[in-house]
Image (tube, rainbow, N blue to C red):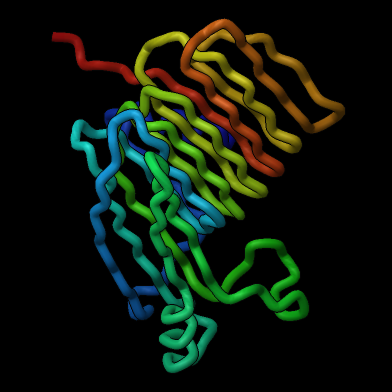
Length: 229
């Protein structure tokens, strides 16, 4: 079962991110890697807008956001076309007060050649380190979202793809819902089945809020397991 497979990956790798990827680039595919650093207060907000592909966010102690983006071409294109496509894939930063917004721009899909929503001729990965106490907002188009060791409010919407969180052992107000998929959680909450394929988990009364919405995919919320001394 896919949910259990992802959960086992978290545990087996010492609670690192799930290794399952939506797509694997060919070995000879063009690749562009870029790393940038932005200041962000520990209580600020990190907002990912229009992200696509695989997003990994990990909490750390610095008052900064480190963003590494990795862009790949796909093997079904000529090399010149791949390079042109990657040049059109951009992630830009904008600051408004205590909120840092990272917006993604990329070529729109061709509904005739690629009728599936979110299907692209490139692969994009985000590797992000952010202050643990920062609020997190992710508006994902499609793909996997992995979040590790963040302690404040988290809001994730994803049209298609799994959302996996590994969080400190604390109390959370949880509002998690998958339209087609499952919600699996180490944290308590009231479960409810929605129609034939949907699943929802709710828990109130805690200061840290988790608002998670997935159209097609699973939601996994796990506790960080600290090694016993």
